[in-house]
Length: 432
Image (tube, rainbow, N blue to C red; front, side, top):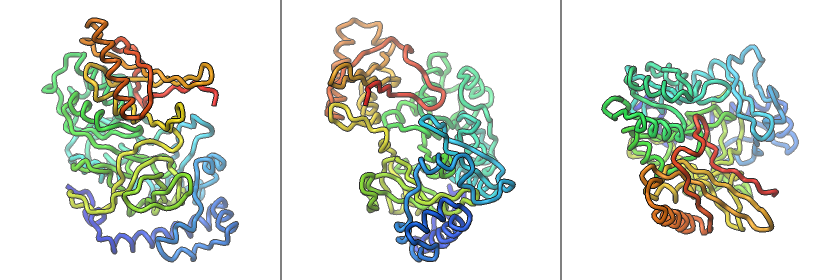
């Protein structure tokens, strides 16, 4: 049930003692070894010894993605380059990528955090993990790989893509655990059904899916199409990678490995720290990372903290499902909308595929939104009147969920792009 029961089930007092000791050491390391943090502290007259309680973390200014980009590539390393054994980086789609360096100790901790998550999903030492996250600078593939090695399971580094091979490997190897993005898991489930492969031919028992937002409706579809129980995993390159948090069998929030990562929730606009249960932006401080410690990193991910013992027995705090990002919220006709809200509405409608695209334009002075969604083969072959009725149902569901009126276009099955990595769900062509 547990990978590290002592760490995962500490009392509040034990945990806060560990967190404070590690926070103080991390702050001291960052101040003494990273010019960026020394300058930041000196500018406001803050010294490492001023951090006497966990509450004092609020005295430390935030670190942002822009700060990491400005330090590209190695400006935030806290150790000599010869101590770094692995490098990863974010995609850099909106500028220079965020680079993070790992010492061997960091890789050991990363493996430890992932091993805890694998155990939460029911993985055992003799299981086969089909790791369909991408390998490379992206942290997904290597993170799961390090954790699988730590657990002692058999890790199949198949990486993302080549769906036919994924399915044949699933059958031939009788894989137990599937790890990949939720959109790719959905695609694999669709492909299994299309190929006529029955659930009796595969042996999967669990899926661990992250790297993009997904809803409970999508979870139900994946679980049905692959015959598995799915677990949400969370992480980010800037802090470590996947494994910062993950769901247990209760599927009621993701357990943050809070002996290694200190979480806060803030108001995105004011920076004010919010209480457990309040919804806001997640801020994370690494407590044990030696290669590149990060203090109060603004993740832009919107969630809340559950600070109570889970029914599984773990006492680590949990974070609720990510509902959006403070920087990917769409403002359409004055209405604040997150893509996850539209997905939630879509997945309640029978007869459509979970593959969709949100297209936002401003041809004149007003925003226009078109939701393109694929019909099932049965619906597409049906009469036009029925498709028009479903389009109205979708439009009504989105209006109910978001307050926004949209145009809906039902497309031919398999006509929209599929994703083997992170799904692209929004095309915003407005001149903003």
